[in-house]
Length: 371
Image 1 (cartoon, rainbow, N blue to C red):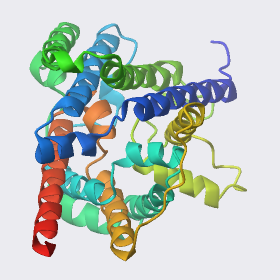
Image 2: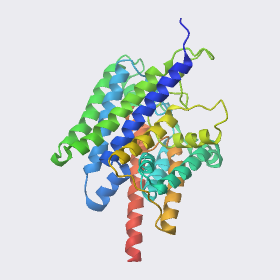
Image 3: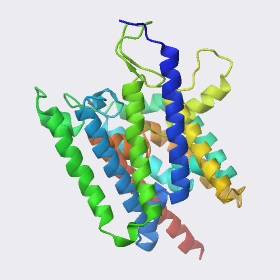
Image 4: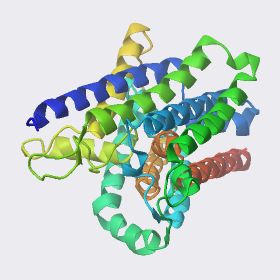
């Protein structure tokens, strides 16, 4: 067997992920893709336009990911989302916290990165608060609480919690067929629903629906195929190169923000490397920044007062704690996780939406009370 050049594989994976991040950041800025905004549009105006955009992205991600898996190019069972340890309470509590926090912070993790690229100093503060809270919930004080109080409440689902493996049976002989059938059925239904609205079928909306979905699929391929080695020369074990989790990864924007801050803090430590998550984080900021410059939309934005500052700080903290606890954000669980058809991802996504609705209702109540 020829010796594998790990450094070359790492470089390929990181730069490819960065490029996908640039594309995603530009597309999100151009289309105003925003999960919080999608929920807010429904609650405040009854407008489902941006929700259709998000649903379209989910549909494309589901179909693409399941087809990649059926073709044997990636293995979703080796991702963070599909394990047999079904931490249902963590998905619910984390999702609720993240959903509430993203409303206070004027956007989720990905929107925070897009807004930073557009000149928002408010989102830069959210970035720092989110990253610190996320790191604490991975390894620190809130991490100890998470493991003891939430992650310990779990059910074991063999062979894993993703629908294709659960429905394929013990022998798994029909797994590839099940992936294709479920992917086309669920993803196709979501895409069909989005296209039933004539107003949705315009360039900006389609861009915001199609590009994020395709980027998620491409990121799975980069990490799960290009970055996969069946025998690492140092450990003689299979490995996914340049991932923080040691597993196949696609886009998510909570833990990677924490790891980005960690890299900046320990830059002189030669053991620290740019990972898939860090490359994606930087790529989205860069893509949004480039789009803002090209379209002359770059504007510095600051806080409007004490309450605005407090809301964004608290929102960032809640997203950091909630995103790690729920094993992902609106992109991490809502797109990447759901694309694997993991049950926990659907639960986390539902909890995020419920938390966002609760926060929006709270804001309406505050305005009415002050009025």
